[in-house]
Image (cartoon, rainbow, N blue to C red; front, side, top):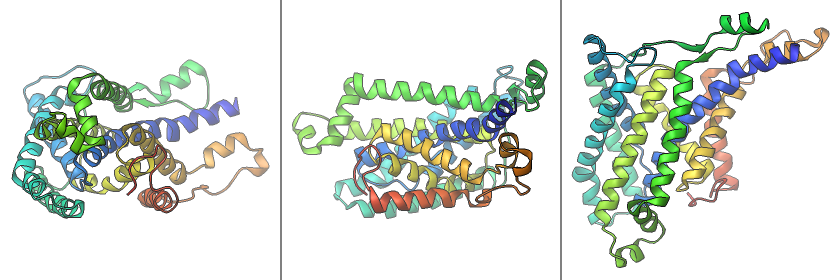
Length: 336
């Protein structure tokens, strides 16, 4: 029974949180890898694009809540999510037309696009903070748990109780659905095949009659949907704070690069590698080891390799190792 209790404790604090966090990182990394693979630059404004889409969703959620509209046990934010996606789509199209289109016409080098995206980052960050404020904003309603620890203990008689939050379940299911839809679109539709052709060989795609501006527009629309969904799921699971999304840029880029920048499958794998690494290294293993080790060997300390304050350092270390020894990533994307 002690091994079963250890597994439940591990599931509570490592497996389930890491899967949910990895799903959020994977959706964010997919947006980054699409921009890199098709538009050929690293979009440093992606984190604040997530923040903007999530902000619109939060505002619409508050509006629905004030009107008494809800989804019962599910968060009202799911009802507001389409409005956030539309708002983010409008934002990225305006940004592309006002900023990036000029540099594409000039055939600017990728480093120029990176610097420009940094400028866009600061502008978006200021806009979001000005509209909704810099503090934590909570917008979660509905049922908090799918399975609570107390209910699980009563059903099983175990000492440890499994707690599975509603937001974690929604995150995992949504990520699976979104990934399936994205891969179906890229592999089965004419527009998706055009995007892949444009990514593989731009000159040959143009000779084949593919409209580059249409490819760019569709790419930005997909990226806006992915960014908003990832931002809202992260905000529901934790809380919404504008600056947090800027900090998320490091694990998101680490996920994309570890998996293989420009490779959608690699972005998904990289998201889970980074998530499990961060959660595993910063988790205090005292409880789990207390169940599996003999009593005389049970640890007195927390057995925590790093404090949670340093979780982003784990992403940076993994990113550094991959860049040094395998710059194409696990799934052989484009070298950085």
